[in-house]
Length: 312
Image 1 (cartoon, rainbow, N blue to C red):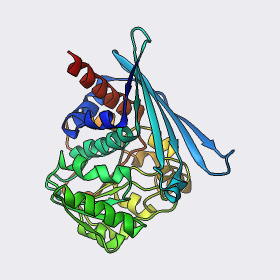
Image 2 (image 1 turned 60 degrees about the horizontal axis):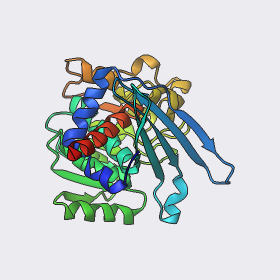
Image 3 (image 1 turned 45 degrees about the vertical axis):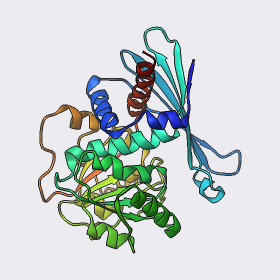
Image 4 (image 1 turned 90 degrees about the horizontal axis):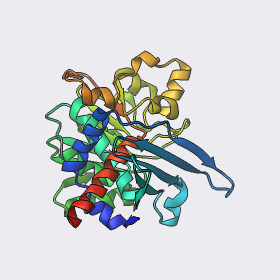
C-alpha cells in the first residue's frame, strides 16, 4: 500500500485542479453518509473525533480527523487527519495519506467553489478571519475564481494575524492586518471565517449589500461565527444538509425561531449542477460549510492519480 506524506500531499494539490475536481465530484452523484461525530472527554480536555466515509464508481475512502482546539496553547495544530483510499470495485486499500493539509486545502477549495457561484464577479477584497491553517489557504483558493487584489487578516491573537500577513506578503500578496474585526468587515467584499468561535463574532449591522460571507469554522451544535442579524439579512446556502444538522450556526437560530428551514437555500450539489444565477447585485449571500466527505474523496483521488501518472 502506498504511503503519501504531508509534503507530497501538499505538492499534489493545486487549486486550479482541486476546485474543478470538487465541482465534478458534486455533479457525479458520489455517495457519502453523515459523518460520525464523537466527543472525547476521557482525557479531561475537550476534543472531537470525526470519521468521514465516501465512495464513487472508482474510488472510496475514509478520513479520520482529531480536532483539539486547545492545541494552540501547546504550539500544535488543532486538526490532525489521515485518509485511507480504496478501490471501490475490489475493496483493496490503495494508499494512506496525511490528510491535515488536504483538509485545509479542500475546505478552502469548497469555499472558493461556492463563492464562484455566490460572490459578485468583481469581488476584489477578502477578509480572512482566523489565521490558522485553513485561513492561510483562503487567499490562494479565492484568487483562483475571483479577482482578489487585497487581503485583510484578523485573528483574536494579533501575533498570528501579523505572522500570516508576513507570509502572504512574502508570496506577493497585498496583505494587511485589520485593526478591528468591524473595520475589516466593512472594508471588504468577501468575509471568510475559519475560527473555532463558540459565540458569534460577526455582527449583521456591519454588513453592506453585495457582500459574500463564507463560514467554515462552526462544526458542533454549540459553535457560531455570526449573529442572528447576519442570518436574517442574508441569502443562505450550504455545502450539504449536514450543515443544518451539525452546526450551531443553524441549530441555535432554528430552535429560537430566528430563521426557518425554508430560509436555507441550495447546497453545493445544486450550485454545481444547476445553470442559473443565485444572487443579484444587492444580495448579501452566506455560505456555510461543515466539510463533506466527497470533498475529501475528490482531493484524495486527485492526489493518488497524480502519483500514478508520475509512475507511468
